[in-house]
Structure formats: C-alpha cells, structure tokens
Image 1 (cartoon, rainbow, N blue to C red):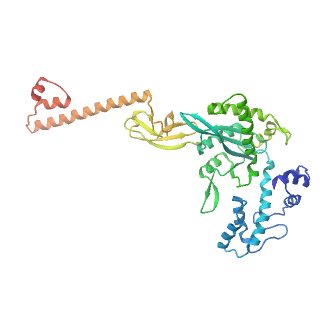
Image 2: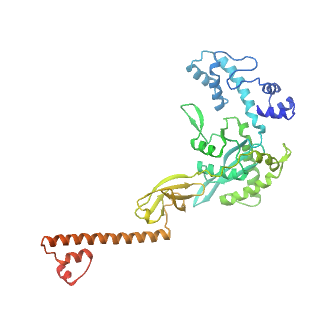
Image 3: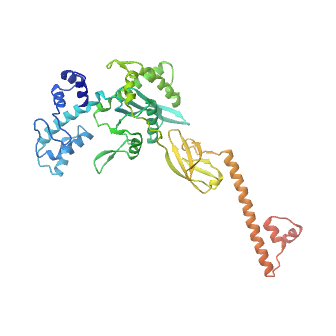
Length: 433
C-alpha cells in the first residue's frame, strides 16, 4: 500500500491514514510493517492458510486480479482439476482474507508521485451529422494522477490509430510522457489470452509503449479505485462542460467535432486554474511538479497509420473504401503502398519507399471519385503515346508482311495497306467497291 507509506513519510498518523484510505487501522499497521503476503505468496506475519492450498496461491491471485469477486465454487472446481485435495472451507477463508488485502492495495493510487501515472478512458457523448452521416461521437480523456490535469479530445472513432493519435497529442499537451498509463479492458490496449487465461497487452500497443517509454497497465475488473480519477473527470465533463454549453444556447449535436475540441480546451484552461478543495492547490500549481518528472518526448514521432496495398488500374486510379482516386499514369498496373490515417481521414501513397502524393479521403461507401487535373493530363498523354506506339507496331508488321510478300513474288493489292492505315485512295476505293 504505497499511499500509506507516502502519507506516513509525510508525518500523518496511522489512525488518520486509516480514515483517509477508509480501511482498518490494523491494516495500515500491517502494510507499514510488511506483515502482508509478498510476491512469492508467503506471509511475513502470522502463518495462515493451509499447506494444501499454498501451491495454488499464485494462481488464485492471478484470478483475483482479473476478477476480485470470482465465484469461490468455480475456483474450487478448477483447483480440483489442478490437484488440490483440500476442502472449500480452507479456500473460502483464504479468498476472504486475500480479497480484503487486494481491496486495500487497490486504493494505493490515492496519491501517486509526480510524473508516475496517467489514466486513459473513452466515453460516448452523443451523435453528430458529419460527411452526410449520423455518427457516434466519443471523448478521449487522459488525466495525470498527481496534478489531476487532463487532456480531452472529441472524435467519431475509437479505433487504435485514433487512440494513438490522441495519446500523442496528449503527450504534446503535457510536454512529456508519464512512466505508466492505466487503461480499462479496451481491446485496443489489452487482449485476453484464452490459452494462458490472462490479459496481455495488445501487440501494437506494446510497440507504441516501447516507442514512447511508458508501461501500459490494466485496470482490474470491479475495482474502480484504480481508475477513479479519470472516471470522475468524465463525470465532471458531462455535468459541467456540456451543461455550460446548453446554458449558452449551443446545440452540441450541431457543433462540428473540430469546433467542439476548441471549446473543451478553453474550458480545461479555466478548470486548471481552480483550487482543488481536497489538495489546497490548483491543477496548474501541482502540474509544475508533474512536468519536471515526466519523461521527454522522443524526437521521432510514432507512425500510427494503417498500411494498405493498392493496385493502380489501367485508368490510373486506386480504389479505397468503394471510392476512386487518380494517380499519375506512369504508375498504371503497379502496386502502391497506402498509409491510411483514420484520425485525419487522409491517405499518403508511396512507391518503392518514395512518397507520391497525399489525398483527402471521401466518406466510406460514397462511391465517388476524385480526379486530379495533372493526373488526367498524364493519362491523356499516356493514351496518346500508347496509340502512337501501337501504330508504329502495326506499320512495322505491315512492312514485314509486304517485304515477305515481295520475296515470295506475291503481288499484294495496295488497298490492303490502305485499309490497315485507314488511308482512302482512289485505287483503294475502287478495290473496296
């Protein structure tokens, strides 16, 4: 229980710490004196439990971390298959004791140290008409644990590239990266491994986290204390920001997402200046300590775009999400690499690692096309060159046939050549007639 140790170092009495953390004073005493179960699942205090159950302590803790209130009956049946020979009473006593310890441990984020942790979450905030469609609108929230300062951004998607883009903008907003970021069970951050029976970090989130140097952590099920700060911030958004807009006569559903983001950032500036009653300081005042402890942002930005292979048609066009976009005619029949950004709704095209062009994408399913004037001209030029090339090939073929016929002393009527080249001569007309 790190918050207990922090408060103890600050000179707070054990009884006061117990009141603040809403736990028994004896629990505080045990944690401050390390009289709890440690990593190897052995007790430093009075011995407890049964030797029959001891080999399964680690497995039980893993299951309780996933679900603190997992059914004891289900767990008992699973342990039986693993070789447990004890009774349900031993397991029930251990579960009760361990739940109390883990519940107390779960609130240790009551006071995180500067720069240590941020919490991330999404929330749905109504719908908006954009690109001719009624779309759900979401709000991304990242909140620093120590200063309580937040970054918010509205989007119409919660896809992983959008999450990464929002997180990058949050890092820039704060001017640094926290050492760990807490998520809930969003699939863009964590996936459940059914073989290992545990939650694992999404592979793409691993790459993103390594790039920026933070540790992704998962909020435990039914233990809201571990992510309570960001959830309270979401409630504050819905009970303060949106009602404030309605008082001003603003219809949120009619406000474009870009404009709404400008409004929420202005609102956050006002919120940051307010004094936090429980801390006696404003968010900006506390953020000075947060900022000094945050990790520096790496110079090279993480590329969150999705790579798409795209084949250029004979008409010098690519197709993406049922829409068509023109490219230079020199790429007809070739494979291009498209990097799709669902955050900005743009696509950048590459050929052999070299950037060709960037295009603004049409709405998915619109079945429309965008043809650039230069691309059209290059296509006309290519068609003209193809026609000339074809005519040269045909002339060459005819000349070869004529030459072969002369060698064989075969007389070929001139109308044949006139007909091939589309030449109307008097002799040819007579021959055709």
